[in-house]
Amino acid sequence: MAKRRGNVLALVLAGGEGGRLGPLTEDRAKPAMPFAGVYKLIDFPLSNCHHSRISDVWVIQQYEPHSLSEHLSNGRPWDLDRTFGGLRVVHPATGDEEEAGLYQGNADAIYRSSQAITEFDPEVILVVSADAVYKLDYRDVVEAHEDRGADVTMVTTRVPREQADRFGVVKMEDGRVSAFDYKPDKPKSGIVTTEVFVYDARVLIDTLAELAEGDGELEDFGHELLPRLVERGRAYAYELEGYWKDVGTIESYWQAHMDLLGPRPKLNLDEPAWPILTMATQRPPARIESGAEIEDSLISPGCAVRGRVVRSVLGPGVVVQKGAEVIDSVVLEGARIGGRVERAIVDSGRDLRKNVSGEDEIAVVGTA
Image (tube, rainbow, N blue to C red; front, top):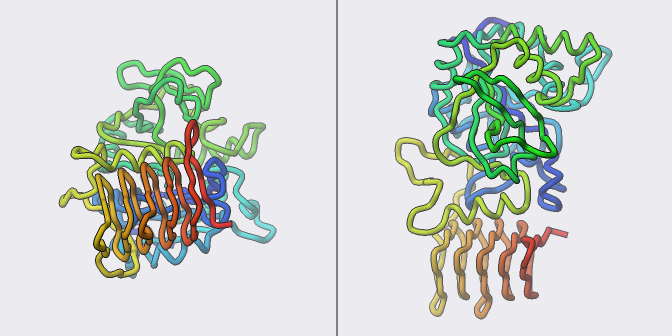
């Protein structure tokens, strides 16, 4: 395979099962989860790649790939449907080759694609997950990485310390990462990785090969790969300024939607210079019928609202019947609401006629 124009290869990790999202990911990959009504989670890293002018993007899939493949549309919404370069979808391989078999984690997924990556011959590998919502110009991270001559640059943010046990926790000294603790039981700080990493390509491939040949764990980055690179002293941090939220749990997925509401939403989806791009079915404008009440909500195309909607997000084609109420909730595409729904997430296509209310925990109404 000939080397493509440019020296950055982006790998979007989109193979996770998303078990912490419960019934919402039983039949869909987590990156295919709807967000803000009209988007999918994978739209965020792909849009960031587009705006960062990174044109070689590989999406690594495994779990429920059909739920994502149609949406990717050969990369067209993100200007990645190109004759040379552009979008490439990578699946687990079968056969007797050493790299064949199902992925055991994100580090293992990249290792099993290492031959193709080596043939592509990038200088820098950008690795991003598809289960967070944020905006970031990846070019700035790559530039900082190259200026420092780093083996790896970890994009970091701050979260409440009590939530840091879900992430990789870093300790920094003048920008250099001096310690890394993967999902610790008792985090020592709230500085965590955002699952955005820039690697020196040769260092990444060689280190993965060392781990595969030795006794190390070749599963997720945090198990052995990142600690080993930190020990070598050439791991650096890049702080993400602005909104970032991992939406891998029911609570965080719901909260991220609530962050879109209010007069000053924490994440601005209507930024002309940095729109979130997506592949979406064309729907007519929402229909707001006589007697409907809507307050501080996002209403997607194709909706029909006859009842009351307060501080909620409705996906395309949602119907809220007369007398029904949707309060502090997220309702996914095509659901029909005939009762009172409060502090809940209602999955796609559900015909819900009973009342549902979450108190200490967000209520989830699946498709079953």
